[in-house]
Image (cartoon, rainbow, N blue to C red):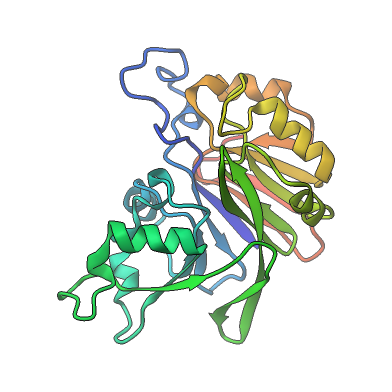
Length: 277
């Protein structure tokens, strides 16, 4: 199982426009963050699972040489997580008569129908991306067929984002959570025993709709994964190089294009396409 961080930034991205702080001026490529998204590959040679599809999706896919996708799982419908759905066109009509699967909650499906209604009309115009909206619910496992007889079981997990219930996802030994401000006890229990946890940590100071660094570390301590990766950073998290110095040994700041690999014996290797720490 391999997870590639396509983007690790918050809704503004990093650097943030009209900001002259040291992070936004940094020449370290690890401090340059596109909007938050990830690509999960269960087995080499099979299409991957896209986790969220933000406004940087096109750039992210071109950078990764446009890998095959089986579907997308969506955490919620805020623009920085679904703003690139229309750019799924090359995937959404590549097979005649087939619609690209989007797994999401009912409220997300309703938002997408309202935002991009041309994708869901009875007689769409030529070239329009078409989607198969597959409704999922927290704590109800569903399966994704990747082809060649390989399926993956996915457990949606309820996460609170400000006042909005959204979803995180557990894929066997890997769990991915973003935009949490509170992780319910039932979700904490469902995360226990996971090998690798990805979780958001917006900044050092408290925020009304996102975990800050201390709160993210508290969730990691409660769930006790072997390794954890932090994502969805704002420029207020500070320099990547400085963040490395203050995190526990088993907690790592994610960066764009970083890959983590979990083998059958749950040995984790981590690195990036840019050979960065």
